[in-house]
Length: 282
Image (cartoon, rainbow, N blue to C red; front, side):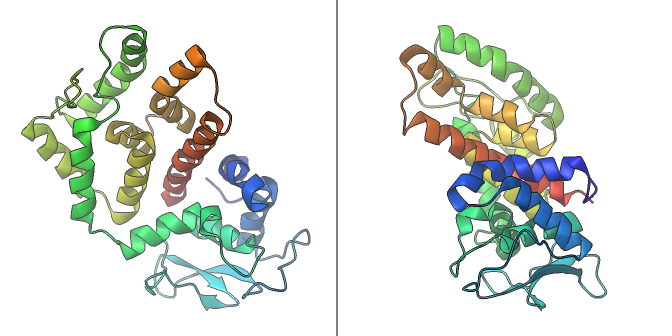
């Protein structure tokens, strides 16, 4: 994905359109900021607020390395744990720089900076990779795609939506992931846990962080893995994750201030790591 391509602009817009109304960040401005920073030009449509603790945002390649860093007033950005904030791709550096460029108050608002949050987690690793892997494999026992309703309309919808994804995952992982209607969940065999653990151990911190975020948002390691591998688009993953809630809405109606907020929340929580994965591609 080139920095000035329509796909780059559209990808940023699709995520920040959800965030924009809350943070007063225009989706088009957000994408334009990243492109302008990459081109080394200023954006006349945006003036840095006078009360912001920095004036200019930029990116540059780390000397002697094939990595990039974000700069504030020419000084390299550090992670929350004060580690070197070295990013693997220019695309990711631009996306994070755009998040800093469009902060418009003295206080930084982390909820408007999903790329920065994910990158910081990957760099600082507040939980060790083994702890993340252990949590994800434990979640497999209660994975939304594996825990089914008993016979009825919801079970039929689950089979239609979930079975093709599960079959792909079984083939991809070479693991016989089981499905259950038990209220105790779907207890996965030890060999499945071993296989999945081995696959996850092969992920670098960047991809493991994205998968952890996706699995948490979707309540499904399988769905998160499908997005990670490019098997599912964001809208399809969200639809699968919200299957039961959507059925309830059709039966009983939408609860304002409840369902609508949940929908916006999961869209952002799935779109952010999905876009993060796109920016990891060189």
